Image 1 (cartoon, each protein chain N blue to C red):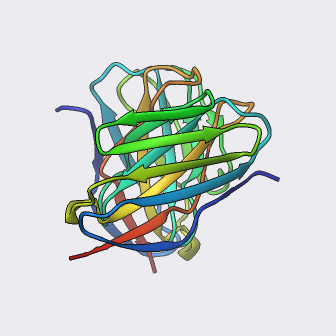
Image 2: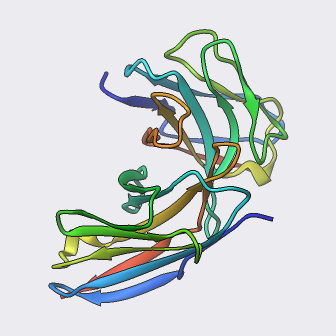
Length: 109
Length: 114
């Protein structure tokens, strides 16, 4: 079967750095997406990785290791507005997105 | 209109009733999707359409139907609602269906079936 694993919840302090991990086992791999979802709102796109390595976009970076079936999202200089759920999704061999359950990130002052 | 709109925002429905959730996008995207999101579970694909005039079944299609008569609209119909269909429903669209095509989401419809 296909499986995406993320921690259910994480807590971090304003101004700090947090790393949200995602491991996957899917039928094929055609890229990995990270989305942000604030409570009661729609998911919004953060990043896309298809090759191994780190992609940096402002305070957010995303890393991929295809051989390990592993990705992480790194958030720097945390702000209160970063409190949200972060969703990991893998595009499989059928080009459909398989979604993890999401990681709820709580930022404390 | 800018992006994707969904209607209604929320709905309480009696079991056995028929309900259509509406989705419209103005980005001229070819592909559209319907997902449901339940607590503790990832987004699950119900139905999708890669282009106007075609539709396909996702992971959880039973009890739902869709149509794609034109590029902009992708309604989702529950023929006879059951309590297990209580969920938040998101419509999404993407320019195409290649690996890098990003999906953009509507604001969602919160549906409660009693």
